[in-house]
Length: 252
Ligand code: ADP
Ligand code: MG
Image 1 (tube, rainbow, N blue to C red):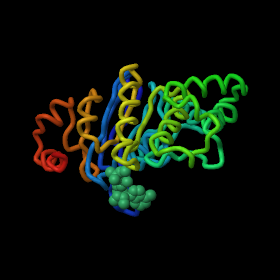
Image 2 (cartoon, protein in one colour):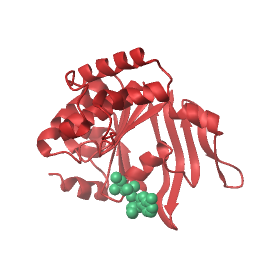
Image 3 (cartoon, rainbow, N blue to C red):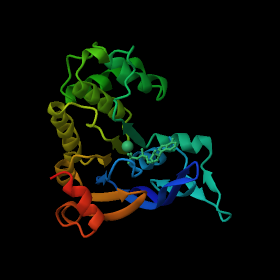
């Protein structure tokens, strides 16, 4: 089954078309990577998928449930708030800049949504949080504050925070681009480990060899259009499209 389907997504800002009829789907256990130049619409696509941004037209379907669709008059309709709230529990999002609360300890950053959104009791939330910190290699950082951690450690906390909510699909928007090069590897390793556990993920990344290794499918987005898509072998090793080749040549 497709965990996520986005069909014919269009999105403009102030009359400027940023996504021009983009369609994609993600099956359970799949890793989809989205590559493309800066300004090509990758973040907008993730923001539309995670409903931080509304679409102008098209269709967004999670686990067969329509989050948004376009009616016969061409008007985009979102599911009612109660349904949307439920659908939002299907996914998690990891940002480029970690987005941790600076005045919360590490464990509070992770457990706060569990307690206040998912209404779990504190003990259960703490247990989930501690397990995930262990898994992220940060068992001793429970009481630290974000400013006391390296960028890589902060990003691992934000991955733990997203995983705590037990999402069906996890989105990453350039999870390593705010990190010093020597800290990038530890995050890519965490994501690779999640892929090995068959976590369903959608990853925007500029790390081409990582994308080749971790992805089941790759989309090359260029100026709001999917110019090329396919397996890593097709898109990265044997690109057919001139634009894909030009883009990839920048990473050689
Ligand atoms: P990418 O993530 O691939 O770098 P973005 O999705 O961030 O690309 O941006 C695609 C285009 O949309 C850019 O031209 C950007 O300036 C524009 N854009 C993105 N968000 C907004 C917004 N909230 N308002 C106006 N323009 C935006
Ligand atoms: Mg972006």
